[in-house]
Structures are given as structure tokens and as C-alpha cells.
Image (cartoon, rainbow, N blue to C red):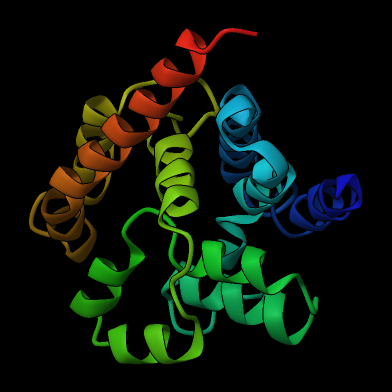
Length: 188
């Protein structure tokens, strides 16, 4: 599946690098986090890395239709890029997107168009996203949630959503770290 990442990086770059360079750096950092947990992903490692580099393409000015980037990005990947359905669904549901969709009145739309699959991959993408700063450097989920709430404001839709999602973000991170720890204890 290396062709999946060979396709995903140039696509994400074409949509983000020029109009949103900071967002592009973030996506590169999220993909780097995905590579760092590849040992727990097995044959899904390339899939997760592709979803990681593409997860925020819905912010691209060319794609933003609803203002809800997981939905806009997933629709583009499905309708225009004809991407692998698993990548599309991971982008649609990254980092507790259903909670933000609910706050925007888009949950039914999101879930009817894009079924949520593979809890362990959803956890892994959330882990990667929430352990990466907007500039692409490593962080931790508590600081990341605080940064997001601070950037958007605590009473904004995003600020309220991210605080509501925080327990699930921390639980996702814990599940991924537990899998990493178990994998490290396995004999080679």
C-alpha cells in the first residue's frame, strides 16, 4: 500500500501548502506521529499515515463548503479524489468529529454519509492529531486541547466542543499508548 502515501502527500500538499502553510506543517507532523506508532498498526500503517496527512484538507479554501472540515475533506476525497473508502471515513471521523458535527447540526449528515469503522484506527488518528501542535511539533493531548480552546475561545463552538471531547481524546490516547507499551513488551 505504499502507493497510498505516495498519492496522499502530494494531494494534501497541493491543497494546503500554499494557502495554509501552518495547517500543512500540522498535517506533516500528524503523519510523522502516525509513522511513530506504525509497529502497532501492522498492515494498516500506510492507511493511517495517508489519513493523517490528509485529515485537515477540509480547511482548504477550495474545499470548504459547510465550514466543518472533516465533512468537507471527506466529501472531496470521496467525490473528487475517489480515495480509498477507509481513508475517507478516517478523515470524516478524526478526533471526535461526531461531537463537533452534533454541535453544528451535522451529525446525522456525517454519520449517514460516512460510517465509522475501525475503532483502533480512529483512536490512532486521534492520538496522532492530539499529540501534534499546529506547527507540526510533538505535544501532549492536554496541552493540545488547551491550545485549541485558547485559540478559538472557551465559549466558541470549537472551544465548547473540544472541552466536551477532551475525555474521549484522553481515552483514545491512553488506548494507543497501552497498545504501544504492549507491543514493546513483546519478544522479537
